[in-house]
Length: 339
Ligand code: NAD
Ligand code: TDX
Image (tube, rainbow, N blue to C red):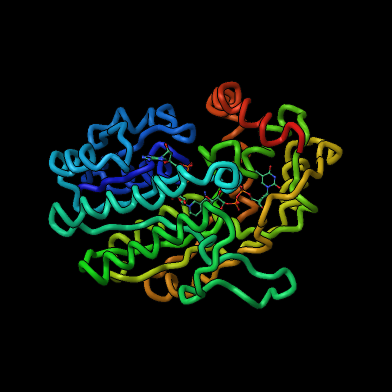
């Protein structure tokens, strides 16, 4: 089988590339990634040595180039990870989010239609459901929860989801969508909460917690997300949405304190800064459907996953130090300088 993965040089996409190459030695994995600030070819260093892997530095919005790749590679299934993914950046500059996340999705699905109604999977997010109140721990997002977005990022992802379902109903494109909760693990870009706190703590820099740090996220180890997508592309029901999450809700402040404790750093590094605009309070996924229909269950407990993640950042300093020493410094100064 030929699997075309977009955004494979980013955090979750790269973990998925390795998952597929390791699990299916007879599959070919074709990666399409334009290498934005979030994409890193060094992440795919080992994959590039594998004869079953091929990389294209291409924008998913570039229709002509994407069609050419489909003609040459003849994918059987497309998994679309490519996206602008950081909420804070979407608040500063929404436009590129609409372009890549919505129009890029359209180009990928048009290519699937043109070259034989190819199976298409859209990697979406729990953020399309908006947020839940902190005082209602009994509430969870199910696949039928209405879309109700807060940020330009989540709105662009919700727009893409609607388009995917429209291509299913109007053209009969064989699609599925997964909506996953917050991932963590290796190759997570250091602008996101967990890797940012690990990197700052290791450098004895302030740990910027938005607001009071009481916002809740539902954390899932990235490998469990990859296994869920693997199950969906093989056994998922066409036209369906699957929520993916591990019932692992934690307050931001508790995560940051845990990272301090694990690294032997003082909590006095924690600095409360101005809150994110439109900040979602709580995300919580109900994964009953994917469990009942496809037998998926998260395998990595948070206690183990966070240890593995911290160990990875300790053992791969060059990877993230290279990132935070470049253009990222300007971003950091702009976002956190006067916050
Ligand atoms: P990421 O920002 O780490 O990686 C995104 C990748 O997409 C990068 O390699 C980047 O170069 C590439 N890309 C961006 N624009 C592109 C374009 N126009 N053409 C080709 N490639 C392009 O993101 P991530 O955290 O790995 O997220 C991957 C997907 O999973 C996204 O669709 C995101 O919405 C979704 N998601 C993420 C999480 C999470 O916790 N990180 C949770 C649920 C869903
Ligand atoms: O410096 C920070 N301080 C802080 O308090 C950062 C970067 C974040 N936060 C807070 C904001 C959120 O409540 O931590 C929480 C997590 O923030 P992010 O890591 O930016 O993730 P989030 O906004 O929850 O979105 C993530 O999960 C869903 C991914 O980035 C999305 O791509 C995915 O769809």
